[in-house]
Image (tube, rainbow, N blue to C red; front, side):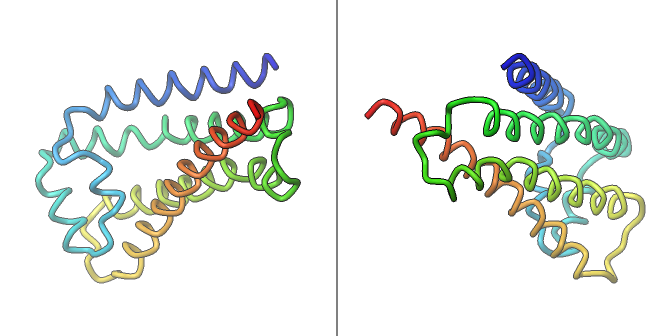
Length: 158
């Protein structure tokens, strides 16, 4: 259980640290994650002064460590704790894979954002669509995992 706690604490510290680091960005990075079209993405990035764009690009390396931490936490919580025991085998399998899959989509999103924020690339609308799709899938899996944890804990109380 120490690894479960350690990975969770590392993920939480990194997440809180990144929230603080990115707090000056207006609009915030969540808007960029759901920019499905080049014009929307470009409009957000062009509102940032150059130092904010550098700030955003610099955060991507730390976000890579964060996604490893939360992937490890999800896997370890699902495989080394009793949290998901009240659930059906299929739900337990989903719990094991949920955060590692979210991390894969997060890594892809980061790669897209690294490339898309380097220079304007308005001639590749499919890239923006893929980037936003990766973000949406990441968030859906993160939220889904949280809901699954709450559901499993409620089932354990029955």
